[in-house]
Length: 397
Image (cartoon, rainbow, N blue to C red; front, side):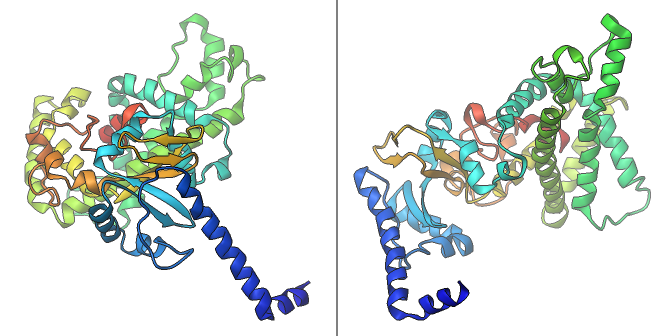
């Protein structure tokens, strides 16, 4: 077989035939565009490669030039397929039309997590858990979160009477975040035992695990022999994967940014925290106390705005055949539509003066807290499918 392949590849006619087939398939794929009123395809020189190299190496310039020449919505040929880019005018149309654009379907093309842990519909269930549980009960969880975070800091950092060097801050913060997350994932058998022993006097814990156990399809009658342990473990693992990575990464980068390039804000942020602590008389901070740290809130939000990707949040067109945007352009079923965050984050009308510059208290002046979803802040998406642990991430950070 190897000899046969070697002979075939050494023949110039066969090589030409193979190249011809590849080009024919490539041109056939592009010719499908003519059936719809698709957004303009940005010009490129190299067949097959298309815009891929520039998208990876000089994305900002590519997007800016394409936006200026072709308008708010255009298409690129990246990674062997056509990808449509939408700007600030169309971004929220994609968010609203969740029956036509699926983020989970689009995200799988970027992070194929379903190939690792399977595709069992748990993502939708986890979304409901976080939305209903954390968003509705976070005020009651703040006390517990605070205790666990302080406990974790004592373990991994300790007292800082003297200056202390943290050699691996990202790992340290990940370990700190892991303790409040892991504390929620308690032993199922203990709950079953407590419920059986205490009966009606048993008070169910307030956490995500209990949300699974309360589902009669997962834990019918709290019978240990009938509990779907695999389902619970898969769900919890997905929650941990999604929450720990984002929270620890954001917290690490904000601290790096504050220490390395934004030292002028340190004293002002510290004084605000000290004032809130004095008002609490040494008691634990409540949800309202944390919300009162408006300068810190604005600083974190501005960091996240400036740290956003240029093009992100791929959505897959899941309309039956095609979707027609309000501006008249059409995209076929299966097309990946990504959002031009750079267009929104650097728009003076949306962000105020000098949008390309970091201004720590920009959002304080606009009375715009970080947990508020607005058209000018897209870090956590938008619409009813916005990131459900938005509040929990900010409270923990």
